[in-house]
Length: 49
Image 1: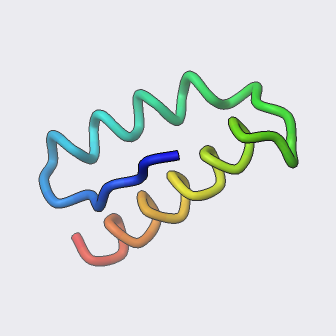
Image 2: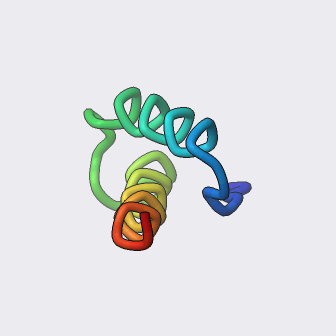
């Protein structure tokens, strides 16, 4: 699982789109783990911006 920081609004929008595609991921699966990490990154970016 490659995760990169959100540095720009474009990164932010791309991450939101990916999250949207992962919303049905089951907990404790690779997709569910990726969803959890991406949501955390988005929350941190939103808090700073």
